[in-house]
Amino acid sequence: MKSLFKKPINYYAIGITILIIITGFVLLQVIDNYIVLASVLLTEYIILIMILLHVFDTYIKPIQKATKTMDELVKGNFRARMHHPITGSIGELSSKINALARNLSELSFHEQMQAEQFSTVINNTQSGLVLIDEKGYIHLVNRKFVSMFGKAQKDYVGYLYYDVLSNEKVHRTVQETFLYEKNVKKSFTKMNGGRQYIEIVGAPIFNERNILKGAVLVFYDITELKKLEVMRKDFVANVSHELKTPITSIKGFSETLLDGAMEDPESRKHFTQIIYDESKRLQSLIEDLLTLSRLEKEDSQLTLTEVNVSQLIEEIKPIIEQYAEQHHINLSMKCSDLSFTADYDRVKQVFINLLTNAINYTPANGNVALSVDETDENIRIEVRDTGIGIPEESLPRIFERFYRVDKARSRNTGGTGLGLAIVKHIVDVHEGKIEIDSEVNKGTSINVYFPK
Image (cartoon, rainbow, N blue to C red):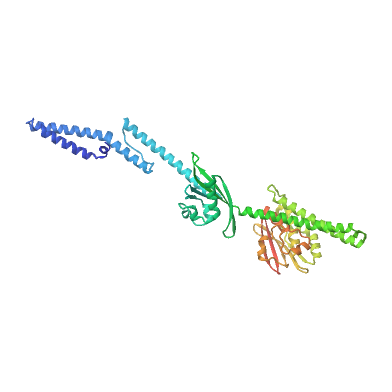
């Protein structure tokens, strides 16, 4: 029956013609009048052709169009429609097919949108993702994973995980995830332009019947967390050490005084002076730690006012000049009459910390110079000295808490090792920047930029 609808109308017309000829031969045996016979056969042919055209146009042609439309829908062309002006059952069929096509088109559009959204989320997540089926073949890797392990997506998808991933910790994570059917967490390091710490979590995937169908691996780059952990441990160790040194001195000299040295006026004065100096150093350390703590708070707020640089320098000048005189340093300060909006006390602390730090690391009879000028967008503070300089490998670390280029010199001057760390935080909260130029045994130049 299906083949009847596929034949073109010409075949049906030929069939009717053959039927008319056969009918003519049969009627020729009983009808002698050829004119009557020809009229009957012609009338029969016309009627049959008209019936054929009606049937073809009403039933066969719509069904052919419906078949072609369905073929297009099967191929994925959901824009295909059936257009045929007809009513009845065939017309209803046409409407149903068009409605199906519209629904499929909308469904396809929504699925495409969901697929694009899913792809966007997967490729823009900050964790590496790998999807593995129950046989160990990789079905999906995202952009972050590729950036972490190199190559391209096509080098992973479709391959067994142990053929394209060489890390033994990854193999063990996958195996344990499949074996125990629960989340497995491991970590490892790899060299990727430096040491990179990666945490991997394997999670099993189950179907609706709770049968294991695969696993998803999530790779977290925890390098920054490791660095923060190291910094925290170093900070605790440094604070403990820095607090221990003055406390030990205070305790030791106090015990010496109690053991009899108090009877000797000269010893009493000397030891009391040491205890005073160490307690002062301890106080400075605690104050600097509290300052850093306040600056690092997320809700830390600046008290913005109009800062007149000339006025600020006149305020700190006696303190700095006295400090420079004690260290036999030649100090010079040059400043234009400039003003900008900032936290006055914080900026004042930046000046004091930079100048005292330069004096501390400059040998006797050396020079320390302060100059302040402006650019189109910033106020530039430059502190230049002829001190010991900073080795190139130490430059990235000088703003770390308790980091000292010359530990002995810093301790002898009573420094806490927090001065430049405080400067960096103050400049950061003002959205400024710091530039350093230094040469060992020749001196250092520090430029601080505050937005106007």
